[in-house]
Length: 299
Image 1: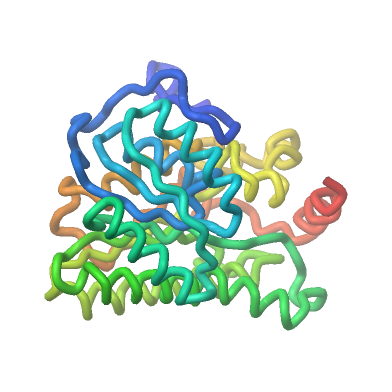
Image 2 (image 1 turned 135 degrees about the vertical axis):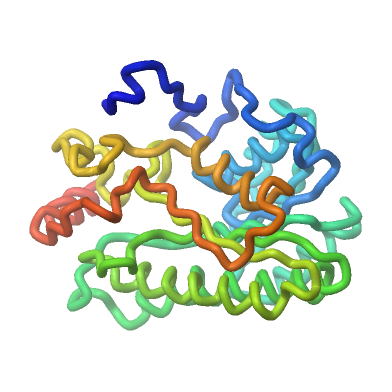
């Protein structure tokens, strides 16, 4: 634990499961997103679920979109019950623009407008490049990169072009230094980081801001489990992170809240890294990661 935490820094509330928090401490005004609407891909679980909850606690109605409608309905019920705001679950495959178009049209019909788009849908796993199939690489690129472009383009054409809005792309630091076993996800997220800059330039005159949030290890997520988080924590790997811990989902949601709100009204084309400084210092130990990958495959 860092000296700052020892003298009283309080981490935001969180729970490891895909459930709403029992309590929530406001840092920003509870009305920061009052009567806005956010469209969140991958919003039924993990970071996306917590983003939806935090947005709703700040007065926002949300759409949570992914392929598993039953899971989305369960998540939407939890979110609405905890926050008193509306949450609309919609079935979307971000690889299929027609499904995105239908969902956006349904959103506009039911909620009237869209202020915020969060591109959070992603797929990942640990795998050395030589063992990675052509189809596996393609699938990750289709979900992470094509999915981000597809959703951004549809929302822009149907609403943002004439009304403005905010886009936040959920990225990663994998490509910053060439992370072992992550050529597929690192390549996809690096493309998204470039996309953020290009779209910020092109769509800025329409009143659209486009930014990126790049999380590090985040507890309580499926990605954290699959990428060896519990084993890594037990092995003390977080000692190499300057803040010497993993982040939590609420911390990531607060970063997205900043980028998606008027608090960052003159910020566009930027990447906010929220990883406790991990990308600066953490060892790129491929042998250790191969062990984690093997153990994770057994889960």
